[in-house]
Each structure stands twice: as C-alpha cells, then as structure tokens.
Image (tube, rainbow, N blue to C red; front, side, top):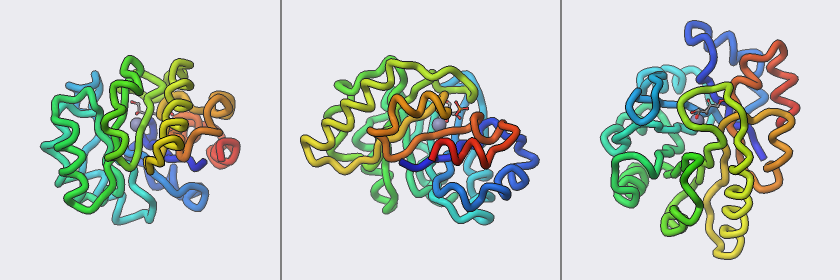
Amino acid sequence: MKVSLSILTVDYFNIENHLTPILDDFEYIHLDIMDGEFVPNISFGYSLVGSLKKKINKVFDTHLMIKHPQNYIEQFVKAGSDYITFHVEADCDVIETINLIHSYGIKAGISIKPNTTVEDIQKYLPLVDMVLVMSVEPGFGGQKFMMNSIDKVKSLYDLRKKNNYSYLINIDGGINADTINHVKDYLDLAVSGSYVLNAPNPKENLKKLS
Ligand code: DX5
Ligand code: ZN
C-alpha cells in the first residue's frame, strides 16, 4: 500500500518547504480540487496543479470535488494529472466522463461519498482505473475517519478479485497510524494530508503509514 499525500491543509505559500524534506518518501501526490458548489469549500485549481507538476516528479492523483467535472477534464489533463477521479454524485454522465478522461490517455477514477454504496457503482467497476472511497464527508482535511468506509473497501477488494477487475483501491479522509490498520490489507493507496503535513515530524508520520 502506498500513501497519496494530500496538500489540502498546507500553507500554500510554503508548499515547497513542506514537501522538500519528505520528497523521497512518497510517490503519489493527491490534489483536492473544490469548487464551493459540490462541497462547501474552495481549494485550488489546475493552475496550481500545473505549477506543482513543473517542480516535482510524482504521480498526480487529482481528486475533483466539483459539480461539473466533465467541463474541466482537459484543463486538469494539460496541468499534468496522471489520474483524474471525479464523484459519481456530481452533475455529469459517469460513463461519458470516464470515457472523456480515457480519451486523453490518462487514468480515470470514481469516488463515492459516505452515503453512496458500492452497489451504486457496480456497473462502473469494469471501466475504471481507481475507486476512491471517502472516509469523511468531502470538503475539509483533518476530519474524523468514518468506520462505515471499512466494509466498502473490503467489498471492492472482493469484487475486484472475483471479477478480475483492475482498479486501484484508494481511501480518503482521516487516515492516520491507527485508522490505517482497519483497511490497509485491502488498499493499494491511502490518501493522507493533515496527519503527515501538519505534524511536528512529517517524515516520521509518513513512515508510520507506509
Ligand atoms: C477531503 C479531501 C481529503 C483530505 C484528506 O475532502 O478529499 O483528501 O485532504 O485530509 P486528511 O488526511 O487531513 O483527513
Ligand atoms: Zn481527496
């Protein structure tokens, strides 16, 4: 299992200072894009993603928490995303949006909020490269891990095995050295933000997760 490091809760004026000391300790960077409509928060956009891409060589795991993801796929592809994950609860045609992401030759992910079940997305599972299970209500870092996400991760793991699907299983929200133990055996990736980047010793906490 690898960590996908979320920069949502860092001081954006000092991103480089936050990342430099741990640059060799993670492979995936998680970019939380929020539009203030789909979630009650506004974070950053494709310009910041593009600036980061010029500076660091990581797998860019872009998480669109926006109402109309289909309208911004091209911009996040051009900014350098390797994965673009959008919410099945957004205002878009899910299959068309998956196909649109794939048409640019990059990987497509779908994300489900805490109230959305794995049954709700079964028909999309053969089509996607990642499933991102939200273990918090999307919108803010530093929230408490929701235990109802554990069964979702387990059933995604079983469904992938049974049907020989190829999606990565990722989880997002409230991941720390304790909560990771509930799910790490079923995951390929785990998003972590505040537990690492807002800690006195980010390097140490990142190691505890890996
Ligand atoms: C919340 C974001 C999460 C968040 C993770 O909507 O999707 O990625 O940044 O934050 P922590 O790890 O601080 O819970
Ligand atoms: Zn996220």
